[in-house]
Image (cartoon, rainbow over all chains, first blue to last red; front, side, top):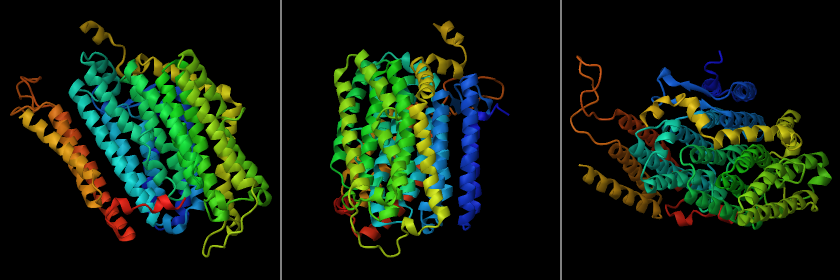
Length: 510
Length: 117
């Protein structure tokens, strides 16, 4: 029963997508199946997480081929945490989609594709084979292409062309990197690669390969200077799609960066410096970009870029405290960013516009909703004791310990910029006096929706806000998880031993 | 053989990137296709090109007798080809739709999203 546990989240999502495809025309069925399936998925993911927490890293080897041959799935604490977060964000977005995405879009297979996207995400988090990671990335991007173009509006198609080109380019670079790595080592298994890359004499060639991986994952993660596709495309699709993109898609890039640069390419000062410089520039450019935007969802898009910088900075510092901070930030960020884009969608439903200049007066009309919106917004800034506060402490402490003052300065500067932006957004949409807008014909305003649909929109936001509050107030538990992940990542021998077994053979050869 | 392949791969990468940098949407697609072919050939080359010895163990033996062609890169290339085929067909449809809606082939004129701030 538990032997194949690692595969259950994958199999469940695939099963869901197939069932949903059979209900192609029955939209109301799809809504119900998607929500129930996502609930089960949360259950399975919690099961997987608690099993890993108790029993340590688990592996499933396809066809029982002995590693390093064949495709392997590995669930360590990091992977299990990411799968759990995907399940939570997936449940929220699934419920939010049922109400906020218009039926015309749902008719073109929104839900099946949505679950294929989650399948790809789970696969990318669980695989232990570098080429298999490439395949999961392709599943993710092809699902996201469909989701981003669904509806076919002019802005969407233009955004999709940019999104598409950059993502395909990233895949090609990733494939090139895999080719070079295979040429160097003759292996694809990540644990085996870790051993073989460490033994290569020609470090220059290894560094070039590492840079190829950095560029490929950097495009996906939207780091400076490879981020420009993101603010051009993330505000075009429906807000439910933007929520799952903003919450999870860039984080897959971050996950892959962390995995590859803690397991395969470790301990290279040159690379660490490059990563740190990229992180600082990402923090600056994302923050300053968000400052000048007026479109609410573009502001949020730039904030995604800005906050990727924190995680990359933690990776660049590469101490246990820094990695723990990165993981904590990742946990916090997935929940908050998903919630934030749903807030954007809700505000759009209420007023019919995304322009901060034309918004306002939310507090006088919907005081309780405004309070709900306050939770993700202020968690994002990290006003203590909300969730964004704790990881920044770890990152700043790590920066001080490493005596890299410029990184610490950039982290504090980016927090300040975020605070200014969030204050501007909050004042603009909640406190400012209401601007009278001409009523849009045929627009489903929030006040006109049925109560059940309203509940389906609000419930996921309440749910994610509660999770955010838990991350903030129960920070001790999250810190435990992130510390354990950090210990596992820093000491990559644990991962290698879990996959390849004790390395007596290697020692004998030496 | 290796040298010819290496030069060919270099030309394919250069041509692909050059085409992607052009302003036309159609050339963009062509660039992506060429780049994809370059990447596939690169896997083939780096998997070591071995002539005339397929990875087959003779009937009277349990192990390989001599140098053999590594079958893994070929499996990888096959997977990559299938994936890029799917992506390219999507890309072509997307470009056609974008051309119909935006009514231009010029990427510089695709800037409606920059205006609606």
